[in-house]
Image 1 (cartoon, rainbow, N blue to C red):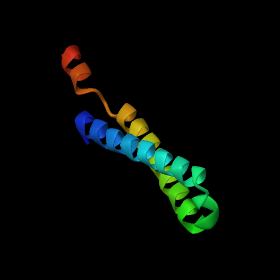
Image 2 (image 1 turned 180 degrees about the vertical axis):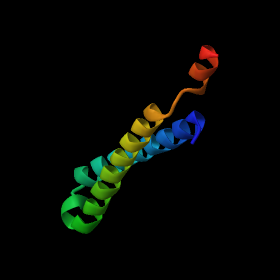
Image 3 (image 1 turned 90 degrees about the vertical axis):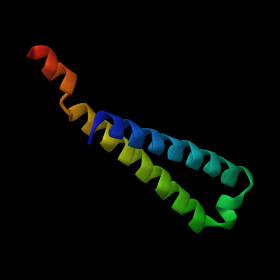
Image 4 (image 1 turned 120 degrees about the vertical axis):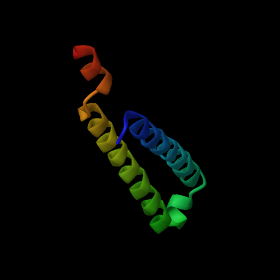
Length: 74
């Protein structure tokens, strides 16, 4: 993947994380977490996976050699 592709994926995951956190907050404020525990659990799983995926993509991006650094050495 290119650095731009990593940035795009990481940004999309950040939006998913923020949206899921907001949905979880509304869910809990209205008591839906108690009335719909399976749905609440599904939201928690989406949030958990998105955070883990974002971390994995960030680490992979940091592991990717910087092409501009190679050009500077030449």
